[in-house]
Amino acid sequence: MTEATRPEVAALARQYTDEIVGFLRDLIAIPSESGRERAAVARIAAEMERVGFDEVRTDGLGNLLGRIGTGQTVIAIDGHVDTVGVGDPSTWRVDPYKGAVANGMVHGRGASDQKGGIAAAVHGARIMKALGLDEGVQVWVTCTVMEEDCDGLCWQYLLRENILRPDVVVITEATNLGVHRGHRGRTEIEIRTQGRSCHGSAPERGVNAVYAMAPIVQAIERLNEDLAATADPFLGKGSVTISEIRSTSPSLCAVADSSTIHLDRRLTSGETLQSAVAQLQGLDSVRLAKADVTVLDYTRESYTGVTYPAQKYYPTWVLDEGHPAVRAAVRAAAEALGRAPVLGKWVFSTNGTATCGMFGIPTVGFGPGNEIHAHTPDDQCPVGDLTRAARFYAVFPRLFVETLRP
Image (cartoon, rainbow, N blue to C red; front, side, top):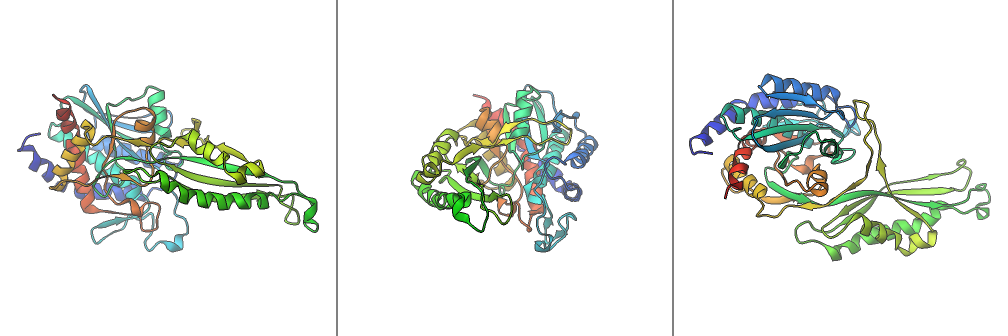
């Protein structure tokens, strides 16, 4: 990067802002929940072709890969195409699929999580190519699928099937324009109690599985509080919450013969899948009920018809502050913001669970929007964030290569 290049990057980012906003609005207008991303992928592919990507293709799972450059250093700028649903439409103050722009903000489902990052990344790569900043690198903008259902599944496919193996990954999830270098892991676990049904008029003849579950529910609530004792200075504490409870019974006039709770368990540094499972199995209420503790699997079909099974375990990951990827990201963010960025972490989980957590590929995050708006009826992304993010994505590849030099 030269002093002369910096104002050119900024000028092109400003020049393309209206196009970035229009592109983002188009993406918001296309519903793309997990497993139904086909139309949104087609729209992104068309944009990549229009702005001059060197190669645009999809893989068997449905991930879209757009390349600029042919150099030896391989850089992936990743954003997931899928979104969560709308939920109760009455909670939205704007049409979730209109992409309304008001007071410098783009509104709608996926604006912050995370179609804004994709829109900025595509045009950031365009700026990089226009200014010749792709020398020595090949940059892949990866628009990945099914992240909301199974974070990192897309990258398990990309890496295990030898489709792409980058030297570094930039996650474009919302960071409020800070540089993120990690987040807690997570796993999805079910606990099941077994009962014996009988007629509801004489419940003493049976064993009610819901009653057996009741003390387990209370123990899970206490466990979440106890996890504060093992909090990590950077990532904070692990957590556990019950996100669903259900039961089975021959009828509504019978005693429940099974009960199941679904747990969202977040894992801080030092916690593993094995330790989390053992912790639950060791609860007195679980042992007394002889309850089963099961880590769940993901087996949903993608929009291409491919099923790629994966265990619902998403490892914790953290990159050291002094790592070249973090140092390059801080430099790129400073170029985009005109100030030193905030260095932090996500509260939620990203595809970094696979790229860094499973496969050890250096991963950093920088994205437009604030994660507090993700999955809410206030989903939004500032227009100014899109401009600055495009600047970041345009310069990060060159700065990363420079940072690797002795």
